[in-house]
Image (cartoon, one colour):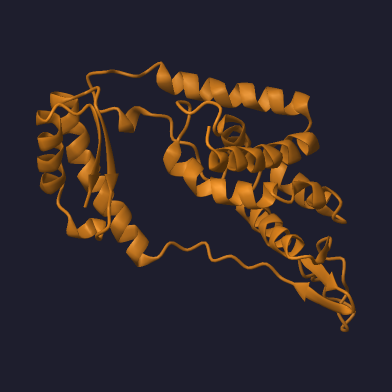
Length: 249
């Protein structure tokens, strides 16, 4: 394992320990077993005669149990992964893991962790709050999370609180974390374009080279490339006798 991967692994594992230490190892063992059972049930229906991708277990993007399992698997179980999801989560995990020990000492952080680990709502909100706090901590600020509805406004009725108080020397300011969770039109177009390409490519490879691996790197818009163009290049690679090759568009 090279130095970059070693650093990445250390940060992700620190993120994992932060969550499991708060959740409790026994609780996590039960939840992990339940999650793995779901994966095994999906695998039991697998058929080599059908395209592989649609049959694979697809983790939900709002399941904190997957986030914890992902950080447990990272760099240690490389063939047990859902790369499409985990590669989105790794930057979050590494940024938070890099300052995990400092985060443990942040006032009221346990409330944020508890809400995220409850797994009865979308954890992205709390994940973004932890990420925001991590960036302030990384840059030398002091941070304190503020419990929800703990501040009464001048009208004496309204109870609404910002997410955190950030301090640096005599400077103090409140931070309200807002994350845009809407997918852009461009992102949807590119995602659908790849889905269309993969639908044809997966069936083709299942017929002609079911055990080969092709890495694709796109430097052009995915929507500007046709499935047939990809298949043509794949055929050339297979004809050249390459079982594992990199194709760049």
